Length: 334
Image 1: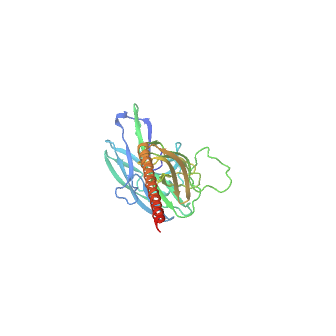
Image 2: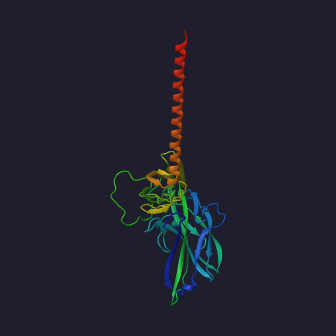
């Protein structure tokens, strides 16, 4: 799943009433919360110092029409099988952000189509590793099991980003199975771009980047894509402030915003991923199919060259005529 936004929804098949009586819940930042992301889907707390309590609130919503019992609990971010990360389940041990959060309420009774606000407190313990940490707050409806039919239960997780001052240390979150071991030499300091696919369509591209985090810290890089024409026909750029956080050992594939109106002809594409830990770049060449404009510009260039050559030829011919006339006049003088 894409890490950006940190919205994790898990469908679970459990015994219950008919599927027609489905219910669902959600957890989001409270509207107007200064720590809410631009998309309004997760919290970005910024720098949180160890030992200093941080208080905030989240909104829990019952989107169904029936009254629902909802469990609310904090969770650690864990690597997902398809890249990016998910969140620990209820009762699963937590060692990072999930263990730093205390909810004011852990079980709610909400009428249909209603919402409530639940305060929480986050305290980073002394000695916690520096760098970016990611966790979540999960809202999960409680299923009253009964015979017959299948009921779909939705677990909704809201991501919580924060940065702890200090030098990043190895994250306590588990790395995916099969991670290479026995590495010697200096450890990597930033993410690695493993694949860049441009998907050209006329004079537009919609790039997809696959990147991995071989470090021991959570990294959410800033992406900058630059498309430059070596023919001097212009430059296009797009910037993404948060490409999507990765836990140590995890990978993700993210589609960047499409870039339109690219310079026709051969172009050079450069992707730069920047984080506090370091910078990595990847370059690739692409030919932009803008033949009508390309040929029009080429024709104009050739026309200007021909006009310039003709003006220069006439100027040289005129100079030769004047030189010949001066020679004749000079020969006739006594």
